[in-house]
Amino acid sequence: MGNSNLKEFVDFNHKKKKSVEFNDVFVKRMVPKIDYPVLVQAAKSVGEGNDLPTELPPDWENNEEFLKNLHELLMSVEIIDGELECPESGRKFMIREGIPNMLANEDEVEES
Amino acid sequence: MKKKQLISALDQLDTFKDSKLYLEQYATGSELGSEILLTINEDVGFEDTFVGDLGCGCGVLMIGASLLGCSATIGLDIDMDALKICQQNIESMSLESVCDIVNMDIIQSRSTSRMDKKFDLIVMNPPFGTKNNSGIDVKFIQRGLSMLEDGGVLYSLHKSSTRDFLMRKVKQWNGVEAECIAELRWNLEKTYRHQKKSVVDIEVDLLRYKKD
Image 1 (cartoon, rainbow over the protein chains, first blue to last red):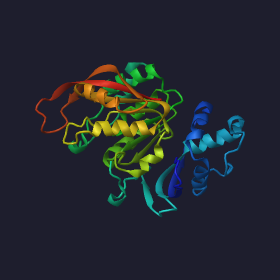
Image 2: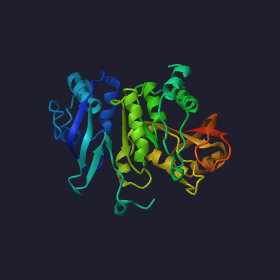
Image 3: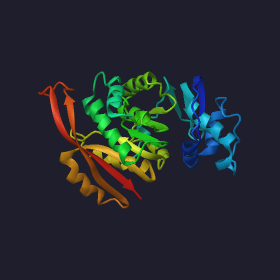
Image 4: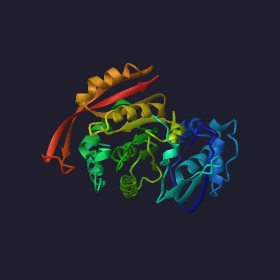
């Protein structure tokens, strides 16, 4: 996920996969919401998404094999233990017991 | 799924071990949770949607939304203790592939802007802002609206006594409409020591916010 320039890499010690029934309607709905190249880059850093192209294929809406692979990546892979790293700031976000910790440090919060 | 089935499924979920007063943690009971979820399901339908649960706590609403057919849901909460219970609940229902949770301060964190306009639906039972944190209910709604896709719908639970105030507030926001779609009763069991009665019945509203 992410619509900013921030790119995330995922490093992991433990991950798990669970098979999920393909849902064509849902995955088509998700494509515009995800930053596809960033997702694939992050996936490849944990050894997943190797059957996905680095850029969104122009025919994605009708490319069932692509949609199935993307759906599997989005739904099946879970990082249990690892970290997310922002290559721009170098900031790391820990993932423990499957829960990413994105609590900001005090110097990073904005006035609301 | 029928109401009885949903209630009995949500009944199996664990709730806060030590509720934190400063976060206004009150578990959404299975009956109230079911009322909220079935009302939303009838109103717009969870099928194939991507749902956000802001201040998800132990995950009653996000798990219920998953049981009613949403395709994926992300729960956000500031409290890691609550999220650990939430994670156990997700696992006990075998919903790991549908439900994800992230430990995040949705009001303060800059990272939340990365979730702008992502969700088809947002469900939440936010703090009511009655415990020295006045205004937090409005901040939750505003943050939720920013995370909502254009044309998306946000459902939020509030004390009925704050309805007039919240309805006046929404008039200041461009392109947002709000309506109370259900008046409910929250049968709250005693959660904190300072509470005198063992059970209180609170009048609550399920408010629906739509964004153009």
